[in-house]
Amino acid sequence: MGLGRKALRRVSWRKGTNKKLPSRLVAVRVRPVRRDSWRAEPHPELCLLAEWPRGAPEPTKY
Image (cartoon, rainbow, N blue to C red; front, side, top):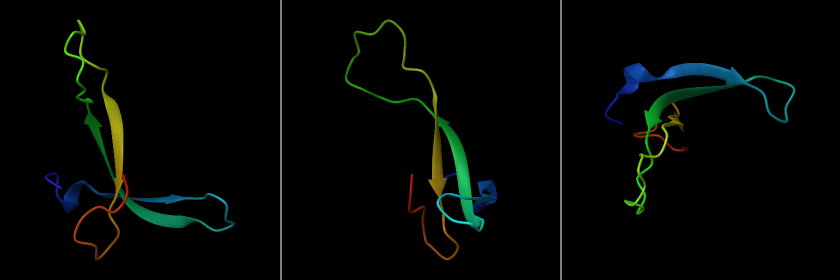
């Protein structure tokens, strides 16, 4: 949510339907934090996608 609504991108996609479905998504690189401090190297970065529907006060799906 700290990125704000300006970071959102409108994307059209299809899954199980014959028409395109629009969504507003934001992608952020994150690094998981786990209780394994014995690791010599940190966990690799991952891409977190969040869907923020129009009119919703915050993202609804991650």
